[in-house]
Image 1 (cartoon, rainbow, N blue to C red):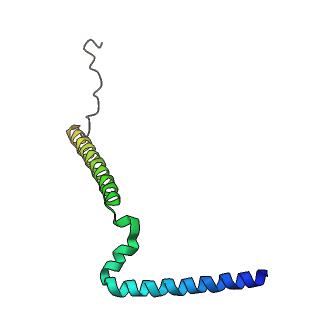
Image 2: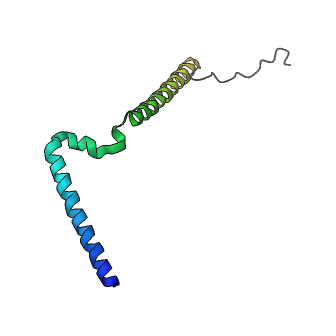
Image 3: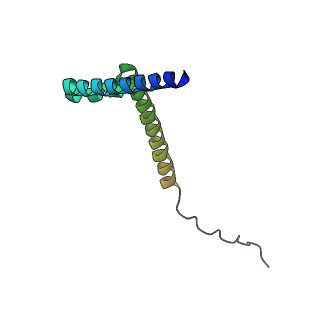
Length: 96
């Protein structure tokens, strides 16, 4: 009895697979280039786009802050003297 059930399940699965492939082929022909958008699914939603834009905005803000810090460090570094003169020995005014 179990072999019969397995055989029926196998035939049902095969027929479902054939029907799915036939439906996909028909959808591709009817939708054309728009079928790619249908396959994308959740990525093609406004919510996903808003999340992605929010992430890009945060990254751009981080990059802007780091560029400001880099410019500040370079400005401070350029104002520092490049080399300090060697200290001269103290003069002995009352040397005997």
